[in-house]
Image 1 (cartoon, rainbow, N blue to C red):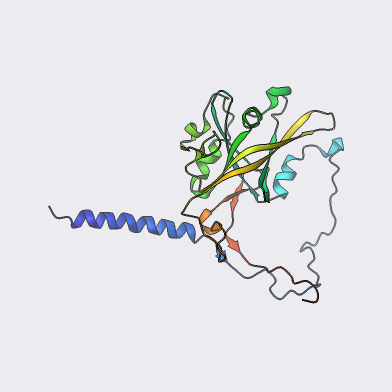
Image 2 (image 1 turned 120 degrees about the horizontal axis):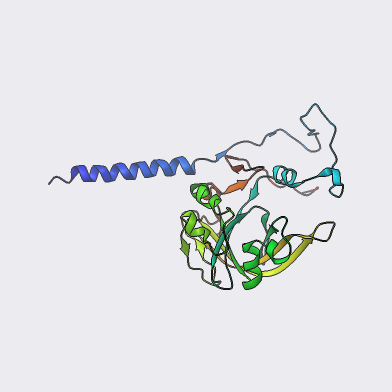
Length: 269
C-alpha cells in the first residue's frame, strides 16, 4: 500500500481548512478615517439635501409602534446569546440585542428582556427572564458568524420545556461558577450572577420590559481569539471573533472595516 494518496488527501484537507480560515479572518480591512484631513472645529454637516427632522413623541397615540424605529436606528447592536436554567433544571437559550457591557470594574452587563405582548403577569415573562428571576444566574455567549444560523434558530417561539440548544444543534459546555451551561460554538462566554432587575412599564402601568443587570463572575475566552494587549492585559482579537451585530427588521451585520481615531489631547498639551 502506498501512503502517498492518503498523505496528499490529508494535506489537501488541511489546505482547504487553512484557506477557509484565511478567508474568514481577513474579513476586516483596516482603512483610513472617512475624513483624515479634518481639523477641529471644521463643520461636518448632514449629507442630505433635506434638512428637516421628523419629531416623534413616544407618549402620543398617533406615534404608534416604536419597535421598528428603535431597532433600525440604534445599530449595530451586540447580541447576548443567553443561556439559563429553570428552577427545575430545564435548559433555555435565546439571543437578545437590547444588550451591552456597562462596566469593567466590576464587569457588569445589562440585557433588556421585553415581555410577551398581550399576556399579563407571569405569563408575559419570557423563559429567559423567568429563569434568571428564579435562579439568579445566566451565561452570555457572544454570537459569531460561523454559527449565526444555529444561534438565530434559538429565538423561535418554543415551549418552556424545550431545549433550544438541542433543537438548534448547539452543544453545552459546563460553567465554572454558575449552573447554566456555556455554548461550545461561541468563542467568548461570560458567566453572570443577577445584580438587579429594573422593571419598565408603559403609560398605562403595564410591565413591558425587564432590564437585567448582571455581574460577570467568570470569563472564558477561546485561545483562538485571545490576544493580549502590548502591555499584557487580556483582550480579544475582534477580527478573529467575527462577532455579529443586530440591525433593523430581521437583518444581521458584521464589521468589515475599521479605522483608528486617537483621542484628542487636552488643550495646552
